[in-house]
Length: 152
Image (cartoon, rainbow, N blue to C red; front, side, top):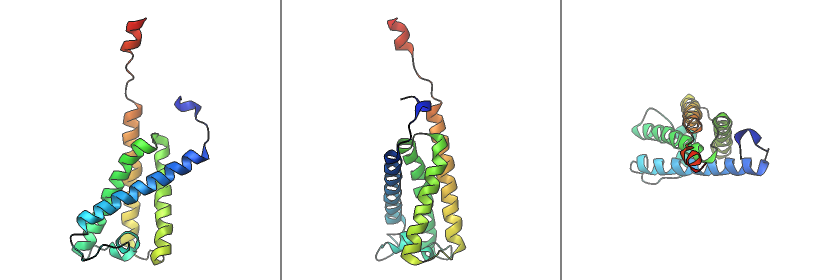
C-alpha cells in the first residue's frame, strides 16, 4: 500500500498502541532487572509505577532513572517496526506516556516529584525524536530498481 493512500483503521491504531505499550514495559522491566534488580532484595512493580523511586539522591534512584531513559531509547527502536511512519511517532509516544501517567496515578497517586516529571518528559522527547529520526532514515532510503530495468 502506498503511504498516501492510508485508510483510517481504528483496530490497527489500538493494536499498535497496545503493542508499543507492552514492548515499552518489557524493555523497562529488563532494564530495571539489570540495573535496579542487582541493588535491591526484591524487584516489584513499585519501581515501575511509583514516582518516589525516581530520585537522584540514591544510587538505586539513578539506576531507575537510567532504566527509564534506556526504555525510551528502546521504545524509539520499537516504533521503527511497529509504527513505521515518522509523522506518527510523536502521537504514539505521547499516548504511551499518557497511559503510563494514568497507570502511575492508579498505582501510587499523583506524581508529586519533579524528578518523575523531568525523567518522563525527557523520555517522551527521546522516544519521539529518535523514533522520528529512525523512521525518516528508513523512509528516505532509495528503492533499488535495477532488477526492474534489467528485465525490460
